[in-house]
Length: 303
Picture (cartoon, rainbow, N blue to C red):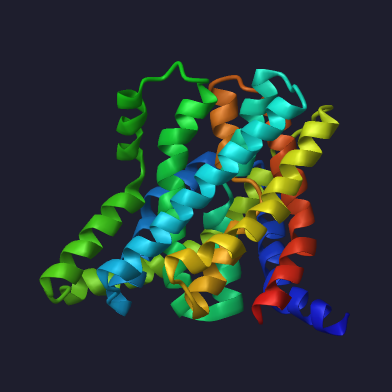
């Protein structure tokens, strides 16, 4: 028990203290999280991805395998969620809400800081690829899911334009595969802006949680939270040997798979009017319960 408490205090409590500061900032100063979100997502996060990849000189397979792992994991979680929803004969809108909260995890403003605190920069490098993949999917497949198929594939693919981290990934690949030396001004700019990503994402997490609301769909909500916090990381443990991932890469990816529901899901649910109260409730509850499950997984992974 003392070991679990130490793991929580060292790796998770700092996350919630900083997020709590963001929560209070939004509650009492009425700070709108949207502009803050735009800065963190469009500026800090892309430079974090670029800096992590270029500073550590990953090879092609080192980049491809984590991204394929994330893609397969999220697709399998989606298929499982759909089957469970059909088995319990939930309404189609509820199933859609469940898909949005189980497939897409908070890999950015929660996952990346936890990975950094628990396993360090090397693990964070691989986790950033997981984040890029999840961000890409939520802006493409997530839009298709939220619109219940009414959005064309072409339109959903155009949402890739809205994911700046993809451009950061592509630019990093250019430097990696050409062997070009990064100009010192760009290197220092990327380093400074990348360093700002983790604290800003944590403050944003608290600000966004302050706006969540409740739902009365107890059973599907409980199932969605269970899939997100327990089934997803267990499935990740089963899948990861097939992608030849080990060491700190394995630790970071499994930890990312155990993250609570993505707050970005609430934006899609609101935009397409797909049970927004249900989705925000799952996001809020899974985030509040996540220290319990993450502490166990951190202990298992050897944090």
